[in-house]
Image (cartoon, rainbow, N blue to C red; front, side):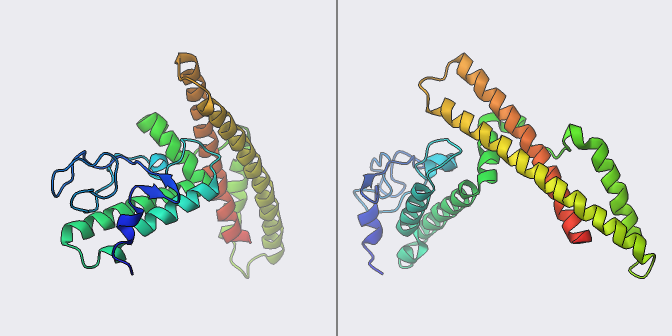
Length: 246
């Protein structure tokens, strides 16, 4: 590989200038100023990305939930080439460690933002901190139905393959029906979550962040957290039903 490739890519992704926060404002090696550059202009040493860099900023994306997936892919692959450990195989241990650290941060950011659900979970964590903890709770309107489902599931598991085949088959069909119903509910939760994501992006794209806008954002974050909590619960039961009753 061309040893000059990383330096040539420094500060740019495609044809666009790139400025990401580094871990420090001065080069760790020669103490020269490195204002948002990947490589020191004086000693050409690779610079560490800030450990406080959020994943959206890391991949040059707005803090939105309906992302430009092509921009995500393009930026990730360009930065991955810039910091790829292969380019630093002959460098000193410090540069190798920085290359690995930057690559690990990029990979974590990409995996998180590429998945729509993980993206929402991450944004809630960014915006709400510990108050954004997502717990697993059943939808309130399904509580009684889920209790009955659990009783059928326990009864089915208690039967051996050779015990009461007709009863076993009846329970299996009931559980499969339960699974289809819950898959429909999961789709409804996904649709409601998508609506909240669209509302969030509209507010995020608007000008200003006054108290009224902040209150609306907090309301959306609360709604998304509740939807994710219900969704996780339903998803777990659907998975359980699929493994148990097919």
